[in-house]
Image (cartoon, rainbow, N blue to C red; front, side):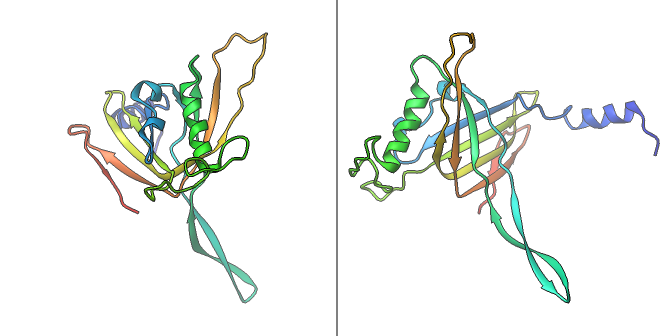
Length: 195
């Protein structure tokens, strides 16, 4: 088949013109303390992230001098968000408090509030995140929900007299699994698959 620019443009137009990496929203919710969730205004400061990866490890089995690959366990890589830092340090303080609740205070003290993985009500100190890919029409096209997540790394913030930039930092989350759903461009309803 001969390559033609008109065919390429027609196929791209039929698919909405191609998904844009700049059209997305991120929402981070704490399941055990609503005060640690990012508000809508705070979520706007989530500058960058990624749609989570999907991995199935190869399980090699040897037979007659050859290795044959079978499907093994499904694994989930850590998920990272880059956050723009405002002068209140509000989002960073929430992540630091979340980490204190998981591992204790910075001095190593542990109490029922700080360092006990499960709260008094038996709720694990985990949360969820929702990533929405938007179309150029402003409607949600794909939704990914990350389940049972908790912050495993809070990156430092470089300080430099010669820099004239707004601070930003990365937060890395470990999680158990993610689900995926597609939205109708007319009804904007998400149907997430189940684990």
